[in-house]
Length: 97
Image (tube, rainbow, N blue to C red; front, top):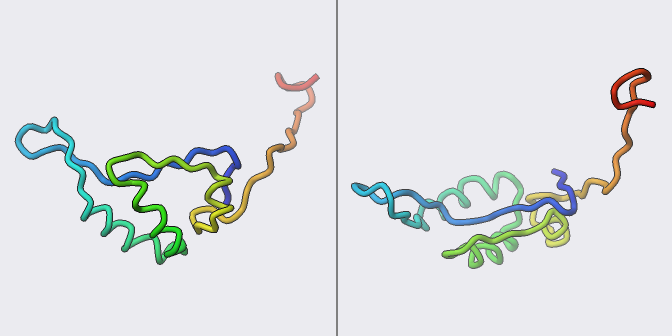
């Protein structure tokens, strides 16, 4: 999987609205743990990285860049895209000379 070096990745617990009121958000840590356990290992996400990342998601948003994910060998992304990409100009097109 690839990521742009400056891409922003957000990791956070699962929230849902409170029964009855529908307004108060409830953090569902058990659902988060089930989600991580069900999908991350089979997707090749590093167990060590997951253990290190998870505490940062408790009652907070945890932002990482694509470069952070690759350098940490997270398994979320394993290769960085180039900072440059060539463009193709169509002769006579609106983006050409």
